[in-house]
Length: 196
Image (cartoon, rainbow, N blue to C red; front, side, top):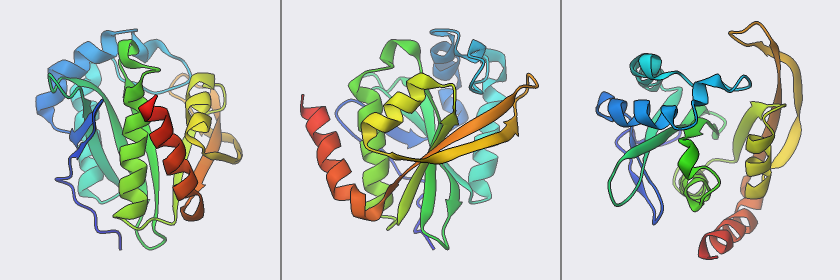
């Protein structure tokens, strides 16, 4: 079993990952409005009026042991600028997925995302003892796919007609992973990127 710690806070120079709670609601409603992220057709990000229900959904999954939910904060202000999770937690096989991640537009493509992934990957491999960490995204979400590939994750394949989206379209899911033997190289790569 993975030694999950739902009180876990991961602290970096550019980002803090702290346990998600309803106290982050106002910040997250503001964050999702930066870029009107709920209008992106290839991902599921709630609009401001549904953010409280999304927080509750993630916390319910956390109680069931299948998710560990974080708010992503800016270090200086501790203002929430997005969310991320460990999800599809498979303790028996020492496997997690990092996903259900979104950030307000003004912090996208910054060191914040790189550091969030470094913090989550380091904890997954070095504390939880994972043998693999997975990432999934819509086949047409080119920005997300490019960000995952920049981390050093390998494309495992495309799950065709994998899910039906709320708008009725059928999603093909691109599946990526980093395995334990790759972690030292990926870690060095991410630390190099963060020093630049």
